[in-house]
Image (cartoon, rainbow, N blue to C red; front, side, top):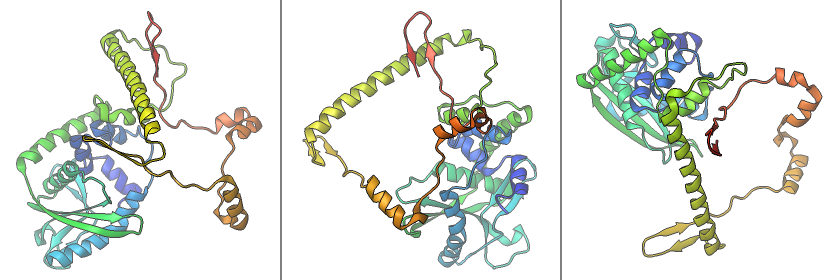
Length: 332
């Protein structure tokens, strides 16, 4: 079953459709994130609402595919390997003319099911790359990509799009090249050069600090450090300029929510409505089950002393600060 230890270990020991899609589309940490995860350098990914939505709706969408196409979705969550066992995928299912099949000779294609929230842009390149890799691994020539839009406010399907995708040997050859690069990094235990989209993943990989470590030489980084310093200064100056204009614009609009000119429309939304302290206290008195327990960290530090530090673990990114030795620059 997807998500269990055996399945995760099987995925870790090969290159999957998700891996090549992340590396190709350069999202979710890109190639850097794929390798870092396989090397065990990233925190465990916890189940989130989007994942739960996908698992919950997958069989429903599969039934809809059957109703709309007349074809059955069989072999759900099948673990697949190509003739090169390094290349792997887990398919949401296969299309078949009968509800039961004996093997791949009885299916007509692959099924990939996606669920997205309302107003969420489809990650088209990511989806299509996953599908092409699945076609490569399974040897199928056709796939059906089903994208269901789910309104999470009431858990209803508001749209369903079906897209036929044919195997593309040129695309698949390029994906194999990407997979080879990923696999080489995994085997050598090295990380690819990170790109901008991998920044949060890099922070997660090095979330722990070696306090006793020596200073790392940066002589080869002089040019890039100067650029970084210039960019940070520009960002700071730009943010101040933006805040200056916004402050004056908000003051000009006052309590109004709309402003117009020949070229521009400006809208300021209504304020969020929240319960004040008195209303919260009243509700908690009437309905204590609505309350939650939250640790007072300041009191905990005073009470536990050094033992408090022994219970902590690294979380969140570490702060990076640069300082020019001959000037007074110090940006974070």
